[in-house]
Structures are given as C-alpha cells and as structure tokens.
Image (cartoon, rainbow, N blue to C red; front, top):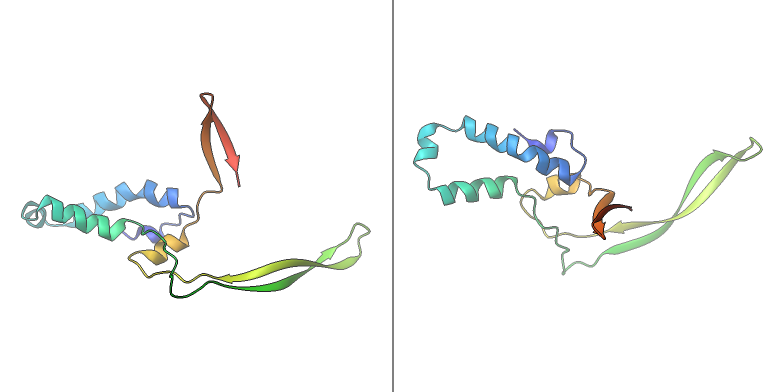
Length: 126
C-alpha cells in the first residue's frame, strides 16, 4: 500500500494511516520470510520504508528569495472592476535529499496545535 497516495493532506493523517499500511504490508509477506528474519532487521526495514525523514536545509546551497508582486482582478465596493496588488516573494529552499522526502513534502503540517494552560486545553491557530 502506498500511503503517500491515500489522499491525506496533513502529516498527522500520514501517521494515522501508517498502522494499517504496515499491517497490510506484513500480511503480504510470506510467513517463512517473517519467521526467518531477525525482528530487529524487520523493524529497521519497516522504519526505513515508512518513516518520514527530518527535513534538513542544504548548508552548501543558500536559500534564494525573489520579491515579486501578485495582481488579482477584483470587484471594488462600488461593483467596479479593479486590480489588487499584493507584495509576495518566491522562496527557493534547497534540501538535503532523503528517503521518503517527496512524501514528507507532499504533506502539510497542521495549521493548528493544542497546548495546556492551567489544565485546560487551548487551541492555537496559525
């Protein structure tokens, strides 16, 4: 099962679907192969196959930033067509290649997180 193609959008979805993917992968292995493989070797194999790598910036290639302006056609308050301009930037960040890096980059981090304050769970949106 390719869990990168399961339609998840967040890293948490990837890891939520991971146990099912590993169970299906193990079920497709022959019993003989599983029984005759060292458990540490099997663990290392599945970890390398499914773990998302740490995303590391390539120290030998600096990031590049190019300021730009985006224009959008909009309708103003009076119903007239107008052009809205926005400052933006194109950013190129070079990464060190790694196993499953493409899958990691396809996932988004959650746009919210929770934290506890005085024993109460708070929601923080980004």
